[in-house]
Image 1 (cartoon, rainbow, N blue to C red):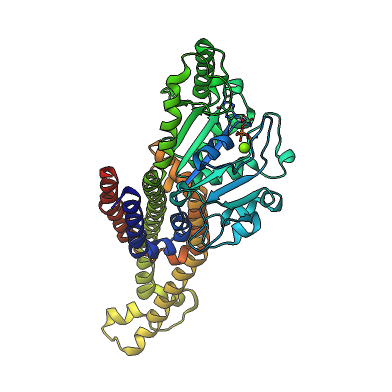
Image 2 (image 1 turned 180 degrees about the vertical axis):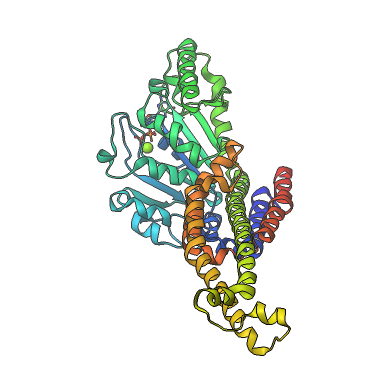
Length: 455
Ligand SMILES: Nc1nc2c(ncn2[C@@H]2O[C@H](COP(=O)(O)OP(=O)(O)OP(=O)(O)O)[C@@H](O)[C@H]2O)c(=O)[nH]1
Ligand SMILES: [Mg+2]
């Protein structure tokens, strides 16, 4: 079995396991398993982003070995284009944005929220090219400097963020003329990518290096890009930057630059590793969503525990009250109003106790129990919920940055569940569910990680 086949088999197995073990828990705790599974339905995705005119479309055409995407100096392309191969007995064709987001077989439904003016800049092309059988490539409009959301007509960075979440590999392309100084590029690296893609999924490329006059010019451009990247990512270690140029622009290659021809090939073969990256990506995604679920269940378990502690404390006090009411309730009315004539304690002392002596103690006890129930339901429980929501962050230990990050993503859901379903969730066996989740993370997912590492 080749790597891609093996990757597919593992993906199917993982999906089965998720459905069997996690689906009931996802449903119970208000998470949607389909959100997690949708990206698994389609082929591996490579997203190509970068400055305008950095050579994205030229590179894609080269990979496809066909002139499919329009290329040219100055911002050329203002559309997001998914390139994929036609299925068997399908012809090459082009699908408009509206149809892409409505097609259930494709994982792009969530892009509908970016509105009509985005959909008008979104299309899918079915092209016969060998590589597109294994993976799909997304060509994107180049990033610009002095552009606002209003100019684009839709939320460009939001779209890039959603696509980056789906993508198994992201190629971020620069060129020596504007080595990391474009405003939108800055925003993508600074804010969009960290929330959407793991660092290991991004390939940095400095393209068009043949336009440097000589090696010292290239070193300057490379240095500038490194400096800008480190400012933008905040990383101390420099990721690898592929130095590449398109082989057939007709421009003479500056002397000494031939050594970099190899990097173009390396970049292309990294692209072909997307199916393998995909498994890692899926595992990371599953891992992170299940950990979100875990912190959610922890918080609800802690909510339940605190409620029970409060309930038992209160029940103890009301229990003592009920016992006192049983023995002395009628004595109070006797002393105040002279009724009933014979009190329960009196009958007890005189030894003349009969069935009718129990009437008032039972009535008093029932009244105490009704009062306890009204107090707890009408007063104590709502107040407890209000307090909990006010101090929601106390429900879980937030010691590490990772826990804080998970909690930030889960907090709102927990708040909603507590305010809307508190009476229901105190009956759920959260601790048992937490054990199931831990087992899934450690045993089941652990096994997948090992399998993927072997590939
Ligand atoms: N010298 C040189 N020119 C290149 C290289 N790659 C692309 N070009 C040229 O640069 C111009 C822009 O290339 P495109 O592929 O259209 O760039 P793009 O990133 O898709 O641009 P937008 O779609 O506008 O964002 C074209 O004229 C290409 O022929 C390269 O490596 N070296
Ligand atoms: Mg282009």
